[in-house]
Image 1 (cartoon, rainbow, N blue to C red):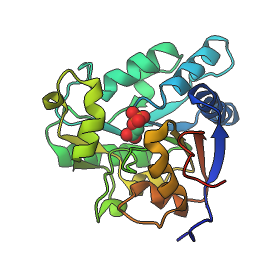
Image 2: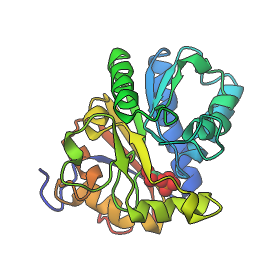
Image 3: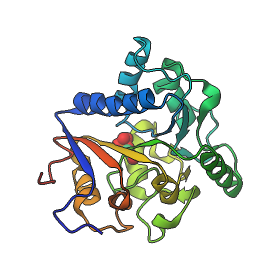
Length: 252
Ligand code: PGA
């Protein structure tokens, strides 16, 4: 447990979204250079899009080779087919996989199209473990402190991949990407905190004022399931790359 005012995570201050994206891409690129056949844990959401664009640019220039990399995404909405434009399968294809020389057979996203939640989640935990867990796990953070779709909940620290009911605040936050709020799926399959904590290094990206409280609580608050990201204080190798606005409540 960290004391208030002492941060166990390494914080990298970025000027703005572009700077955050470049810094995060540099860290991922270094991982791929150091271990060309590394396992990357990947995230969806608005925050990492700039990071993926930067990596795609470097890949095109021949500076970052994904040909031997394998990837495991954090989460997927339950009930969406892989080619549904709102699915995270689709998001990863259009925002990253289609733009780099990764072998699509080496990319993995939980199977939201499988209605059998227990089977889908157990299978995902099995393949992530078989891959030896991510060398580097990229994470965004929700306004409510969630990581993946691990929402604030008394038991959120103790789970592997599982089916979650999304909180009202997450449904609201994600509704911007849907035509109507009723279209936002109410459930998702997500890697659990247990799975995430197995990654050897973790990279959290955050930008904008809506993330300031969650970033503060992740770094300086008590370790509590009411802020799932606060568990990262107990991981030995976490880097947070955040812009000025997201760091506004952190006294650094
Ligand atoms: P965002 O989502 O990047 O779209 O803000 C982050 C998250 O919910 O993990």
